[in-house]
Length: 524
Image (cartoon, rainbow, N blue to C red; front, top):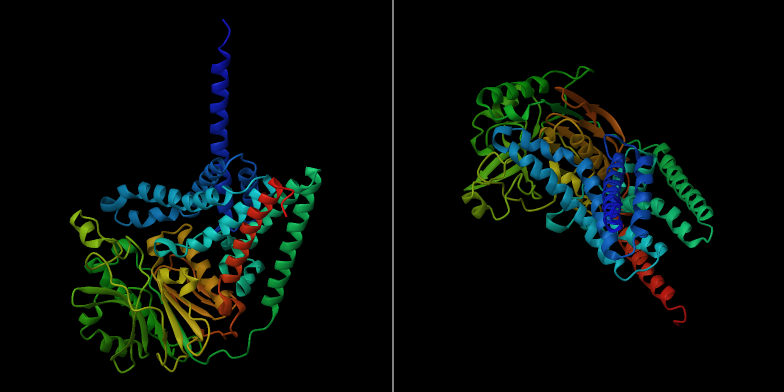
């Protein structure tokens, strides 16, 4: 008995669809391997090039968007799998949500690829112009991810370069400029292959051009890194304290006392040179009491560590709670306060909080109530501690957003301070990606960044994003360090992401116009 030809055809077609689905997922996951902590940027660029080829050679906007969606699922599932970690701090309460969180972040991120891809490909025909349109759409998507739905500019295509000399391009064009570079390198082999009648020759020519562009970016970054920084290191010694307070024990009545004493012990004593630090810095939500309920703690701390203290602490006004930064002065009084204003949705506040609370859904990272209240916004603090230069404080998640930096004019600070509690991110990729983005803020702004983390990584980062000293993940300890010098305002500080966004928009417009001219060769 012979097989039904139509049945064989359907079986073959189904198998091909499954193979393409798996291929796209795997290519997306490979593209994520350039992110921290893996840093395999050659694999990432090659994978992005294959994704461009897959999308550009589809026959419709719908098919291109589906291919982009599948690749995006693989990319965001791997690059952001750490999103399950907060739900595992108290697994008996939140653990059941972890698979939904990972699925949501993977599919949600993938939609940020698929929808712009579909819109970009609708008016475009031909593999060459479709490749250009897709590459431009991904760059614009990376930019939009920093704004829509409060923003989540995590795992951008440009983040693969942060730990290489190429990352210095961020001083010129920011993180979106780095994303544009990534997509340009992925696009060129596909573009020249599609434009050349000899496809192999075009592919090789495009690959050679990509290598030339990469070599130029690498040379620029290497030259910038080799130029000495100004010899204006501040004389003050900062003591950075990393208590390594495990998140699941952080608010336990017994362990919170242990961790507080650990903070005191690590803050006390002379420096290696025999002197005393000029200021001590503790991480985000370092203590278990509210600022208004501190009692004699500021005086007790003053007696124990004999230096001004800058710390993360929660505070309350009426029935509103804030995730804050505060100054405990040398005389035991409370000085300047800064309230975190860019809060983590569902982590530090719950959208539609009143309605959600009736369903039993609260912000699990907020210690008090159903969430924090946002502060007034970014601003520069002056006169902190022992005459420290003007500083912009970033609390945890705020360092992910380059748009929050105050980068020019009379208000420009001389350094950045990030206090954070990365214990929520686990010990795999999350803390390392967060650290990498903090380094990127230093490169973009030309300002040194001091990072003080509960469980790590605490670091001293110079104005080019180089780590000068650090306390590794999962250890308790302290760093005594001088504040590195700042640089003049970078081109990115003055122009922001707009040049990269404009170039991507022009590339997309060019693809649309070029596609139209190809369909109508007699036009004009």
